[in-house]
Image 1 (cartoon, helix red, strand yellow):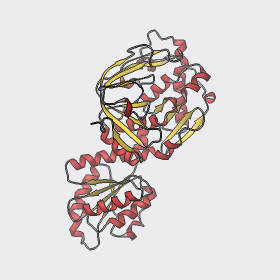
Image 2 (spheres, helix red, strand yellow):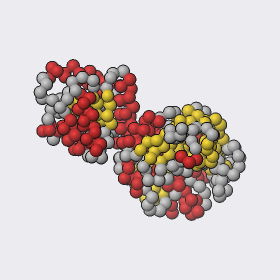
Image 3 (cartoon, helix red, strand yellow):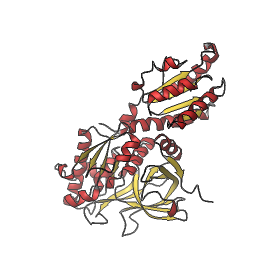
Image 4 (cartoon, rainbow, N blue to C red):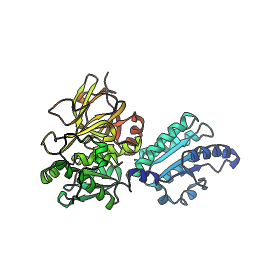
Length: 411
């Protein structure tokens, strides 16, 4: 069954050592052998091709590579590195320089000239120990960005609204009209009852929202897709019930699934799934400031909750919205501006959660977070379990966005 995790497992990462011909092999061979062991441990192929000049670069089969690691064994290798990055044509590239043989100097030279031309190589100085941890982190993000470029999204609703998402990620979209979504016969079963407290929920009213989950999952599989976005309100007007439950369950199954056809949030949901192995949660801003952030929405994945049930949809009273109590712990709150120029994030700690008051979307969560109103770049923010700010910084860079932290610009 296609999932983002399967795309990630198919990403091919290849390392290329670069060395100047003025040095004999004995000069850099011990360094190369140490790196070979590191690369094997990180799942990186270290090909037999040694890059010693521009003619070697032309021998590389770039079409077979998803992520490239360029290891600068010696100085005098910047030109060959630049040419290889040009041939890779925008695929994620990591440049590694070590502390001897003018390695760092060549790596910095290559990176600076490539950035001036619009390329986005990640530059890493290697010092052993902590550097291996950072390399593992960068590789994880680079694999994810590469996987996003192969992602296919099923869109339920009208045409358009995803253009910048496609430009930034390289993903693809297939469209399905709400009227073409065929609902199977589906009543309440043990699978649903295991995820949701159905006490007080009318079985006849939950049948269609649950059938929609089955239908959307089937569509994703039929299109060999990896995620979904839906124009919720046009769907609700046509069908008479909400897709909230279906989106919640798809998120549980590992599919990034965005309500309101919000592709900025879909990108963050995909990053959350890839970075943490767990879904993210789209939340609407309710209130923020003075170290407190409140988000509310109706599509929380049940796997993010300690308790979940169903309530009538807030705005319409239609069946059904997911009302969950989110699990305590550390979160990262992130948002992307409408032009995909800035990815902004903050570290947060969940204080309390549930259906706390009426007059709001059914899952409501209050976080300790340093976010003020005048800093907000979006109404929707995505909560991800754990502190993944460093990973989001790398992802933003590779995707061509500027990374900012909430609160960083205040004195």
